[in-house]
Image 1 (spheres, one colour):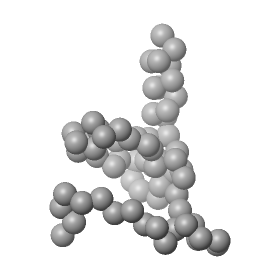
Image 2 (tube, one colour; image 1 turned 45 degrees about the vertical axis):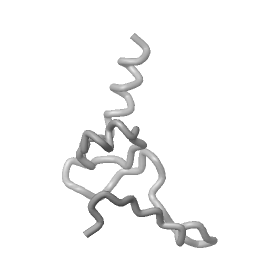
Image 3 (tube, helix red, strand yellow; image 1 turned 60 degrees about the vertical axis):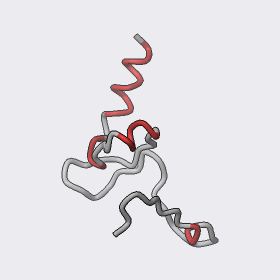
Image 4 (cartoon, helix red, strand yellow; image 1 turned 180 degrees about the vertical axis):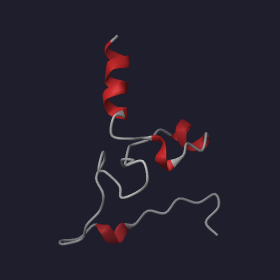
Length: 65
């Protein structure tokens, strides 16, 4: 029951510890990636599987236009 709370895993900050970096593929259906989000996206409750491998490329194309 962590409703309304954010977990910051300070134990990942050590030699030999692992963590998923931004844009890392995740072993889930649809092949989503770990992706940085804004607070607005958090407040809108964006789904964790909303970002797939092609998302950064589509976003870059939109921003370049």
